[in-house]
View 1 (spheres, helix red, strand yellow):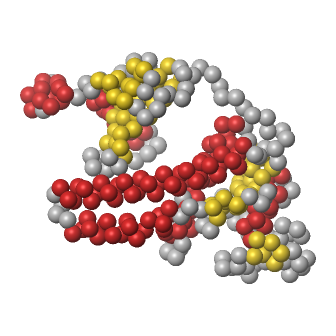
View 2: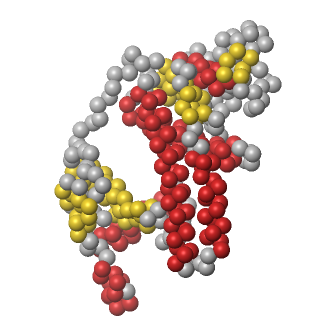
View 3: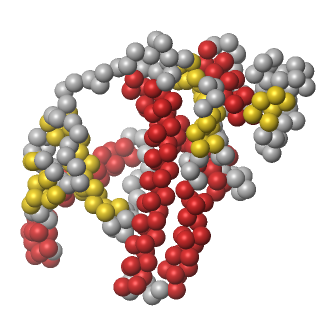
Length: 312
């Protein structure tokens, strides 16, 4: 019945790849409803077309054809890609998506081989202190700078948003301005993710065990003075990258307790300075006289936690 109604009332459906609709209904919506029925998640919300566009283009495992720098899509034909596939194997899934007027093909490939696990026996235990001024500071004294991408483009973003508010919704100029905003947001995301990927890969590849903080980011965002800077740093995303990259190569992650005072504890004698404030960028111990950058001091304490020398 659905097919007959579809042909009569929605003739444009014949121009679509039938597998795209099948995958959206059966895999995406059906699985979302099943998760809601089992109590795993809430009932799926309506997804606006303007919020994001994507579809699964394959008809099953091994059905997509890719030759060099081009891919064959149903109902569309051959489409040129920016680069060739980096991995050889069977194509399991292909998802086509649109972001900031750019089209992407996310291709899942089964290589039938496990990634080689590097030898981490000779690498040190590392503690990492994450923050706003520096994206991360390691106990080895390595500082990874926070690119602050949103702050860099904030004035331009505000100007474009003011322009959009003055445009007539749906007009040609409104769509052009909206596309510029989407492109700028995409650039901000790319800058942020590039810095995070480079930092996390460098940290994980040079450690045998990593000590990190258990951050309550949702609670931290309630501080309205820091909320914008915290969102710009995207600390949750950074820590997630650390965790999944560590798991991939067998590096153990040790999380300190949420209330462990890594910044207020002297890394030399263990004295806790309860009066240390966020504005104090240097830690000075009143007992042993140890003086050190507060972020580096915190990273060393987190390394001690990872080594198992401190009860949390």
